[in-house]
Image (cartoon, rainbow, N blue to C red; front, side, top):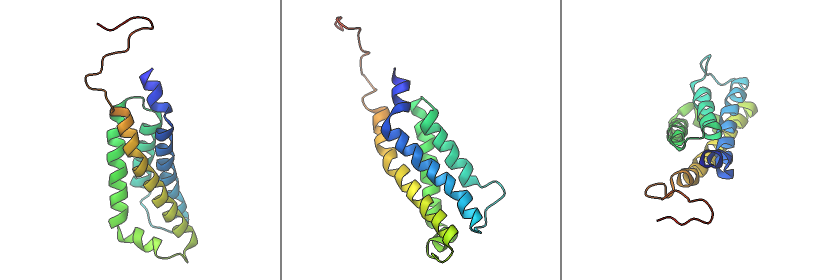
Length: 137
């Protein structure tokens, strides 16, 4: 079954793991004294993207997950606070959380490309498979 294949793909699981890692790093950063809102939007966005990648069987759900990952990845890169946290290894907990978030985002961004290719590869114009022993006309 296609939907079961899409959610059981190893590449898709690695992508989802990267997103979970990035999301889990936000509470670590908060514990390290980084100032976040009461409900951190990055945590919510990353957790939702991870859920879409890991549990939604529909290939179109990968598009909002990819956009959310790009949004957080670019936002983190341009945010001066994030760059400051990465440049201050003396603040061990905040620094570690920031490094883990960066690693998770890089994993997710790198593996999203093959996940999208795998999900959308050859879907247009492909004839459905026929039962064993029968030929397609």
